[in-house]
Image 1: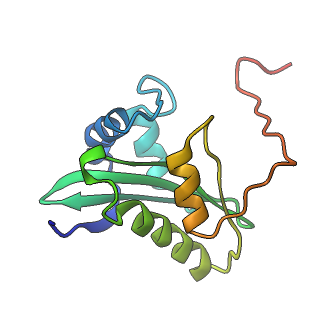
Image 2: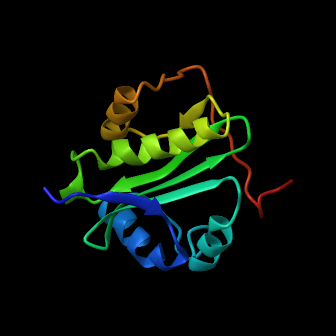
Image 3: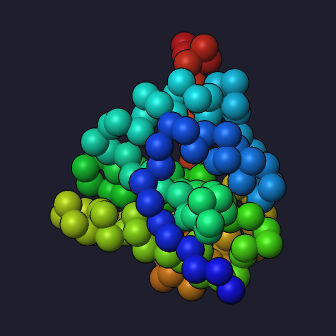
Length: 145
């Protein structure tokens, strides 16, 4: 098995990140919030902890970690199918968790879309508690009342 490294994401990783998300079956919006311009803008924020896992200079995994100064979030985690079950997703999650801990944030959370037993199992393995008493609500620009 080839060794992987984790490094901060740079804007130039954008095409490979989109390819990873596509290969892993993760929904994304390359013309919207996942556009190159948005990535470039977001990467520089203090609240972002965007990382890629790399093997031989190829992106094989990605996580978009963020925080709101109180809680850290594991977002948009994906690993190429042929590199899954090699510890890459665990390592990406641990990296964001460590970044949160380093700045004094003691809670991290993740949201899983729909019925996703693989992600659910990963979060369980990492020690995340499944809340069944919460409802997730969003409000999007253009839909504001």
